[in-house]
Image 1 (spheres, rainbow, N blue to C red):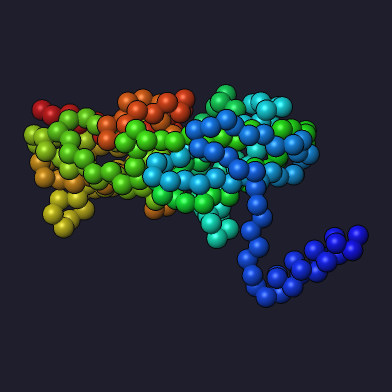
Image 2: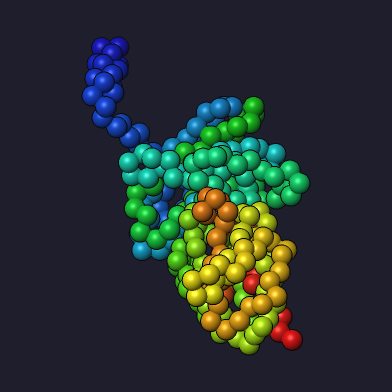
Length: 264
């Protein structure tokens, strides 16, 4: 009891001095065996930690006990315990504010995994998984490296239709059009992360496209910028061969978009 009281006193003194106390977590090794929590009652959380080096990493949290019937919240904090990203969706993840819930009109993926992508060289990451269900559960966490050319910064030339994926918070894809014109440009896909395509010619913005919209005057030399709305506050995943991003096998395509070009 005396040791416990001294521990509480020490924590109180540190808090009073505005010293940031970082709680440790169970270590997760990238591309190694997944680790599991103990039993979490409703509202309880488990903490994990890992180190993200030269390769981007996808963190997966799975409700082992309840599967797709379960409900988790996955959060990632940086080395200073500042919240970086979070999700309560199996389809995408978001920046800290606002917390975006599943879009009911899009349905819920049967995939039981909640995931967040972290860019290369992120460094120390603290992971918090909370059981939002009333039913007790065990959660499993793993970290998978994404070294197939996937990057948060992508600049590519395209002369015909091309596909990309918004996989990281703040990601901005830059596409330089080198094909024949005038051509029609359609932004296809990317609805879940609210992708936007901005066509710039010289110093002028010609158009900003929402998913499903078209621009009928695409010309050689135009630059197309693609980013999730909210300055990249949302990001998703991909499941196809994606030009400029390597091959994705996430089992879900919420981050994918296509710049569809039609020439006369």
